Image 1 (spheres, rainbow over the protein chains, first blue to last red):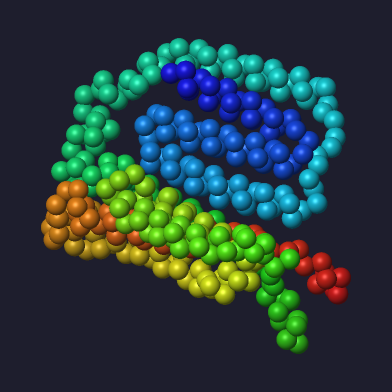
Image 2 (cartoon, each protein chain N blue to C red; image 1 turned 90 degrees about the vertical axis):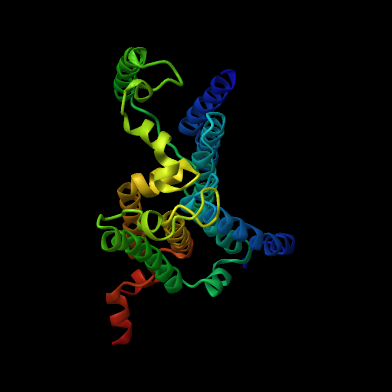
Length: 183
Length: 152
């Protein structure tokens, strides 16, 4: 259990540094540290699938962000915070924190989810009958591609749409410029 | 400004093929061991990103050009939708695992098992790999066209 608290402390410190630092590059690196801490946490929680995806996506995202920060000249952030805005945000964070503490008290203990106690819950059915119903040894893959295939289809659609958006916005020449060049 | 030093170029030209093979392995054995289409696709994309960082954007575009990447992306999405529709045609229900239930049960824990799940993994891997490579290529090639604005 101690390893989770150490990792959590590490991630919180990295998050505070990422928000508070003036240098944009070190903020990006701190965001990467949070992601790697999260992937280590998934690994210790015995979820290798999601740990693998998290670490790979984190590396790629870090490369994109570092390239984006180095290429631009905006590496330093300046400007002071207003007193009133700071007080308001601290009060809001405090209220959310107190509400969160009360909500977490009502949750079941760590490692014993509600669905494990409910009879006929969907997740228990997946664990019991996943192998004979889909034939896949990896239960995670049988859930995301067979039982919950619609979710994956929606996720693929989201990715596809976002890529179309990025390519359309960031293309080199718009159609108008090409037509003007031809004229 | 054409890429990095010769040390980085040599090492990345050695390593890139292993990263690519590892991505293919993760995709193909996605129904047996941890991994799957998404993680494997990101690894495939990262092998091309390594190429792009070491040798420059033009070299990577020579290997996998922007139109080719977008075609691969569309191909992956179409394949995944086709597998879903084929479930409707052969199994009666949209997205049903018709291969496992009717035609090719296979043996559990073998490579040929689980019906449409490996095929879906391959489609998603193709899609995610091409799509992330496309995003990074577009983001790195893109420069604000200041000269074009001045002419107007």
